[in-house]
Image (cartoon, rainbow, N blue to C red):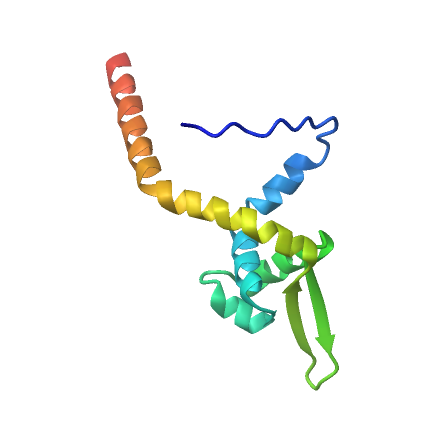
Length: 130
């Protein structure tokens, strides 16, 4: 039985689409998941997120810092050591993201199968139209 969505009137949705777009980005989700475990330095983060480039990790970290979801701490060493950690706001986002990731894992086979079925129907429709 489907769970009803909470009755939450949003009088002003300005900026929500932009925020959801950022939060739905695969790199953002993975950075938050890694940082939810512990504070990390840049190279450790990069090793913990397969496939992310230095440039994309830098961009993602800057965006998250600008949104107030992570803190960047520079330690005065030579060379400087930089650590990243979730803020309280970032921690509050980690649990809903974990729930979304769990849902995606639990339903990925059904969604894959549905997509394949849909593609077959679309191809059959094109064939019938010809």
